[in-house]
Length: 225
Image 1 (cartoon, rainbow, N blue to C red):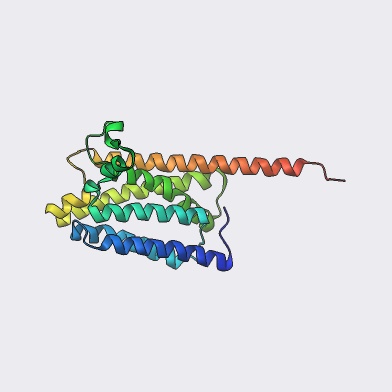
Image 2: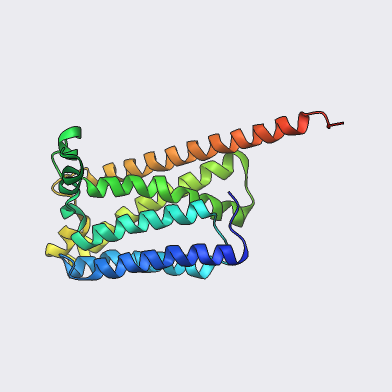
């Protein structure tokens, strides 16, 4: 999907930035664990700064910007409550009268797992567009390598979590990792991010093939008399 041009692009990106700023400021007020909130938001600030600094040189599509906005919004919600304490099940029950945990048989707070899945599902599009812009690779490698990069960055984040937990220790380290006693937490998080990235890649490749096929069919039509 092509990027919005000119004034339209600036307004679109400015609108998303303003909406995210409102959400960020609101969720920065009285978080449950201020130290964990600050630690979680280090990468948020770096991500927003990177998007701002590269917007002109590596413009993304409207879809990619929207997906990044959605992911960052989920992330700052997790940072406000700490991931293991986000009351998503209570919210779902208030809306539907049914427990989401009960539907899936979950025994733990799985907001962190949901966001790891969304990391792969929502960010792979932006990674793909930036990768293709930087390298010019298309076809199979233009889809596979961005997916692989998203998956490897998920694994890198798990190492960052482990390192931060070792450095800070105590309650902050436990809150930041959010394993909730699961010894396979890191592996499950990486697997869900990989699944999200795979689904995003399959969807993008399918849409690309459909558009390409449609254009080829149009080119084969005889000229109108």
